[in-house]
Length: 186
Figure (tube, rainbow, N blue to C red):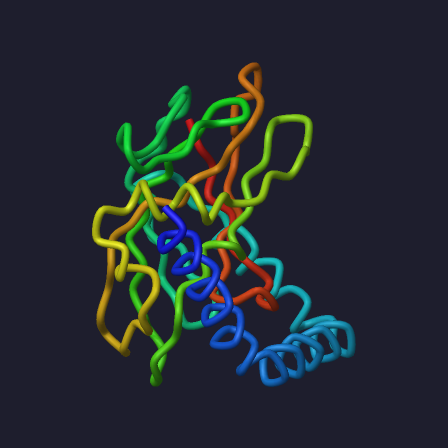
């Protein structure tokens, strides 16, 4: 059990380092986009046309930065993940979101489960439970390695939410500094 915890901490650290490497480029890209849309009324109209494409439904591809996400399914009400020897019990209930992540960029990019967010109808934000995700993904290397351009992986993002809450949307990110893309659930 101690090896698993050490591995999880090491993996989280590596993910954070990998995702932070492109942060400066992302931040400068976002600020230049904002300046461009505020300086010209015509470009603001073009941005408004793109806005509906920023929300997808289960089964529809949605893009953020170098990743194209397709949420395959969402299952809530799970009390425990793993087995009797190795596993984790939910504080409330686990919601397991199966997602396909495809690298549409020109260089390798690491998927960071901790950058993903889920929301309830009242706007309450929930962060992913990366510790539980280790047990939900039998093929643990799925989200711990870089995804090369053109390649894709499937995996489960786990959220531990109160038992009486229902998730209504996800906000998926290619890195912790990206703008994100919304996917409605249900």
